Amino acid sequence: MAEETRDRVKRMAAEIGFRPNALAKSLLSNRSFTIGLLTNDTYGRFTLPVMAGITEALADHGVSVFLCTIEDDPALGKVHVDAMLDKHVDGIIASGKRIDRRLPVDLSNLPVPVVYAFTEGAPDSVTFCADDFQGATLAVKRLIELGRRRIAHVTGPESFVSVRERSRAYRGLVGDAFPVLYGEWSEAWGHEAIAKLWMAPGPKPDGIFCGNDQIARAVVDGLRERGVRVPEDVSVIGFDNWEIVAAQTRPPLTTIDMNLKALGREAGLTVLALAEGHAVEPGIRTLPCELIVRQSCGGDSKL
Image (cartoon, rainbow, N blue to C red):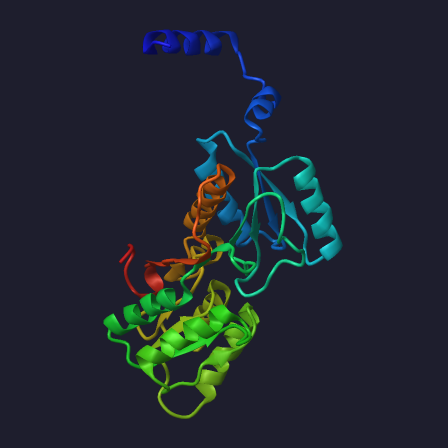
């Protein structure tokens, strides 16, 4: 068909409101043009930005995404997986709350491709995750560049792989002048950690790298309560770039963005390639994090 004719047909179709029959299209191509996203992250803190990236990547390909949340219920997980297969999805993306735990449902040996994003994948699968070591390195190097020499690290439970990777990067850059303070992913723990640091004998930190933004916000509040100025006396950096927390911290919080939307885009394009029959090398793909500079360590722009 000539390009001029094609354009004329498209204009007429738009004018009369014609829409192709999706069912007929799927029957002809043997595809449903849908992707299932399965997660146990019912709060959506990690899955929603991943889903935004998937949707953005697949929209131009005419592929829709539908989300199923399973909490930590294996029976519910099986129900949702069966429903996805009944709908003849072209593929499934599994996502979760942490990178070192699998979803409570078996996704191996399914008749459709499965890609994992921000959750532990099955053997010989394609798995996408943020580079926690690189992200922590960005944070600590920023503090060092600002002239901070007494840098403490307040973070979450040591049982998390992400916590251990961030702590390893921290230790490699600053040594063991301060013990890593492991605790809960909560503001209460941030307040408690500041109390521990300020009650301990010896010099106090002039820089604090926190394992997430909730902890960091409480650290900033705890410092203010003691008359310690942020960032003049102590620079503070968080992790996650959870904007509802980081932007409302006073002063606004410098933090590490895990680029979950970009991670979702890569997962979406990969599951689409697999659905179209392309070969994709299995393995774990780590995507770089980004430092977002706000006022809690000085500055108001990205480094």
